[in-house]
Length: 74
Ligand SMILES: [Zn+2]
Image (cartoon, rainbow, N blue to C red; front, side):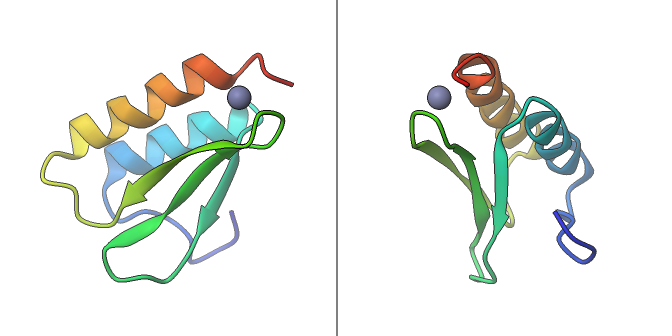
């Protein structure tokens, strides 16, 4: 992710960093509600990341679960 692509919720931002560290692609689009996606390029699955999730802990867990499932795809 480039500068200015940080998620405003720090738990979610931390989970996005873990996803990137695991080799997944994090894409930010400037949609109001949808912050972007975490993408597993080898199997082309993805998970949507919301800008203002009702629970940032649950949003972070969702990302961590996706990362755990896909970190070994490559
Ligand atoms: Zn995968």
